Length: 227
Image (cartoon, rainbow, N blue to C red; front, side, top):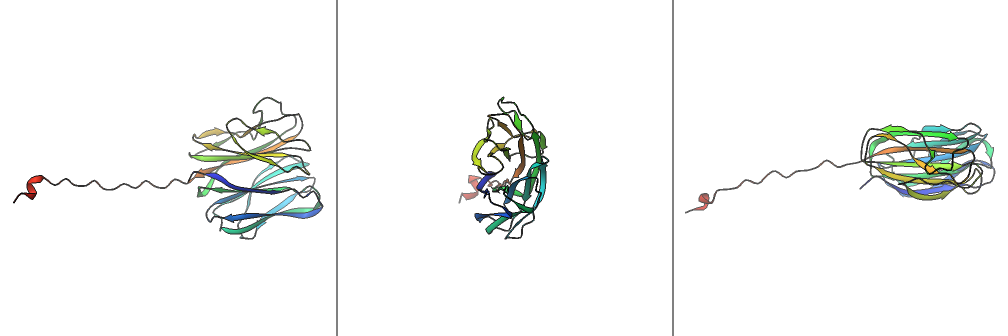
């Protein structure tokens, strides 16, 4: 199976608390989960889930308003609730969790993120910034949030996975793209108006089964069968 985004769940409650949780559909053991969180002057300190998977922080983008990207690989599988923890109660506590399937047990293959104060409205000018991947085929996924404004559009060549987080921090766009090359990569979006934009994303290595070859069959001379 090609590397792909299997499912996406998100929540943006807009009410004050110290945690936000999302319930995922049944996950598959060995897949990965990538989580995005956003905050406004209140730090997100951890991401956990009910399977006991370990989440590593790959990117922190921004200062007062922040976007963070977290990844858990080779997950346990099964029912799962993912939670993000803020250091204090806040009304801005959105979370997005995506299951990534068809990947290797150690699939991380580069990532990047950046804040752009006023990205131009030029096509694909909003970007994660560049990083290098080492393996193909693979999958690039990314999220971009327009702080306190409407979402950007998906980048050229990317699959639009929808608008997220419409209540508190501003609206975000999630997207993915199959990778067939190695080297310099970047996720791109197109902003529809100027203002602070936070973008992060990364690549996953696709699992490719080893090819199997049947041994050649020997040809038996017809004379062998003569009586």
